[in-house]
Image 1 (cartoon, rainbow, N blue to C red):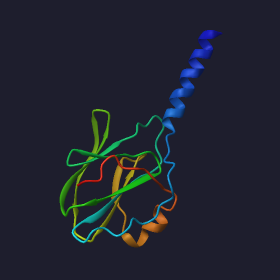
Image 2: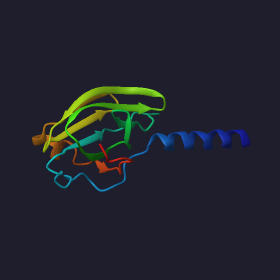
Image 3: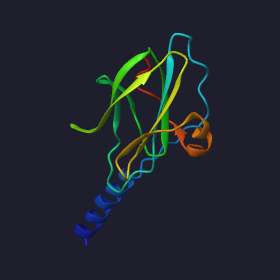
Image 4: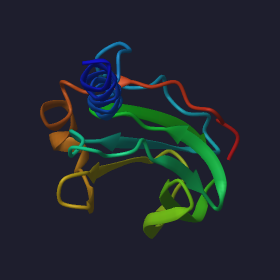
Length: 141
């Protein structure tokens, strides 16, 4: 009986760890970026079962640990950046993005399908209305 309770307890911890969803305020536009920077928004869709929380990095520098249905943003110096989603030591998704001064760039990582897509600014409000804010670990880029 003790063995079954231990197994059920461990299973409960694993399942609850898989369901880590963002808990901040619902999506809203960030305040306008400084004129010499652009704004990068990163979104993460619902997580697949057993999914780890990816660390999003720009040029190898940690930006945010992005929970499911979460988003974050940073004001970024114009240029080309390598955007990486890492889970532990595994680089799950890597792509290059270009940020321009005064530009808003919206990127969504779709967990179940392992896809990264840019969301057109005209469709952002509807596409991510249920996403919640996640505090970034770093905002200096």
